[in-house]
Image (cartoon, rainbow over all chains, first blue to last red):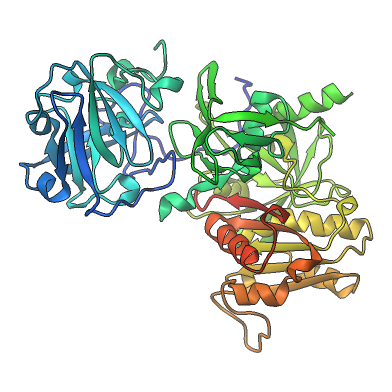
Amino acid sequence: MTGFVSRGFKGRRRSGGPEGRVPPGQYVTDDFPVLSAGPTPHTPLEEWSFTIRGGAEPVSWSWEEFRALPSETVTVDIHCVTKWSKLDSVWEGVRVDTLLEAVEHDAAYLTAFCDGGYTTNLPIEDVTDGKAWVAFGFDGEPLEPEHGGPARLLVPHLYFWKSAKWVRGLELRDEDEPGFWESNGYHIRGDPWLEQRYWGD
Amino acid sequence: METDAMRLDGNAIGGLMLELFGAEMTAARGVCGSCGAVEPLAQTDVYLNAPGTVVRCRHCQNVVLRIVRAPGRTWIDLSGMRSIEIPDAG
Amino acid sequence: MAGAAVLGRLTWQIAEVAGTVEETPRVKTIALEAESWTGHRAGQHLDVRLTAEDGYQAERSYSIASAPENGLEITVERLDDGEVSPYLVDELREGDRLELRGPIGGYFVWGVEDGGPVLLVAGGSGVVPLMAMIRHRAAAWSRVPMRLLYSSHSLEQVIYRDELERLAARGDGLEVFHTLTREQPAGWTGYSRRIDNELLGEVAWPASESATVFVCGSTHFVDAAADGLVALGYDPGSIRTERFGATGG
């Protein structure tokens, strides 16, 4: 640190948030910042499918079949590794448990794959027992493309780069295979409460 | 579309590249490892609003550069670029 | 000497605000004095870094508005939900200091030695690096043919309006074309719509003249103008573009 301070500069308001709700190093925002590593895909719903590969057989759902699955509305806090946290965000989606029930497998890990080529890796135990969804609604409305619509992964207990936008499926694996960010500096698991932002954290 | 408005070009990371490579890089010509297109880095699609900086070939969208900055260290993935021609400082 | 010049560009240095000029209600020019400044070329930019008392830092890039012959000035537009631009436009004053790095850029640059003709296409505050080129051309008393096509929302928002009028009146080969896209004053005879291929066709030289083109503005503006010129037959390699973020100032 140079010790240089710009007279009168405050930057955006960065508040700490309620006790126990905000992981270390984060600040609370009312916005929903859009982060993107590439152009927004626009897959028409007629062409959309969600596929789980790597089990006994691949299993696929069309958009209609996916939307016919039991879904739920949840209110969760989300934490981005770029330091903003958004509390009490409301999502609607299908539990990953529901999707995995359709597949015979004994995998320990998965890679989520998406339109546009983004990938992220997760242990199966981080997406089961009601910890994760494939979300198609946010704040009572269909999920907008810039926020990952028509559907994105939602894994609120990990940093939000794991909640892959434009998700199209899961590849089940025996080993943890680093995804787009995990292969270039970001932590393989990404627990915000342990501040697991980067390799070696 | 908001994310399209957030797409910039290689000029936006001129300072970052100067710091990381120690040279003026916006005029440096890179060869895309996926489609073979040759362009100055200024003519790439740059996404800054992400957990890192992502630079894509304008022709095929292949990621040619990925940069993640953390306290005390920086990761750079150049694997999407086959080669780069850097002019000598004028 | 060359090594020191490179290091000067790589590292952050402190500059003092020598003066400010309000260009329009939302736009301010800031004159800077930096001890280790090595000079610049028209079209280049510098990075500004601000540090709050709690250590929080924010960095942004701003195009250099001044000709290389005439010191160091940046022109900043205040973005409504910006984090840095409101500070620079509303708070920063003469005598304040800020950290900067640069000059940066080797692609979006022009000097009189590069010749012409030169077509400059500006969207809003995208005019800033192009103004450095215009000012450099004037300082060098060059007669290289240069045309500026400048899109603004209204006449009040045109930056450098009087100076552009004065320079174009020299009749030395600089021509300025304005288009006002949202509001026009009574009796306005310039263009009054967003740039489209027809407008470009009327202002730009025929593709056969092999003009060099510099386009600067928001991503949407730049993409539309560049595509329009390619549709007119311009070689994509002759069109140099610099996109400003729509947000993030």
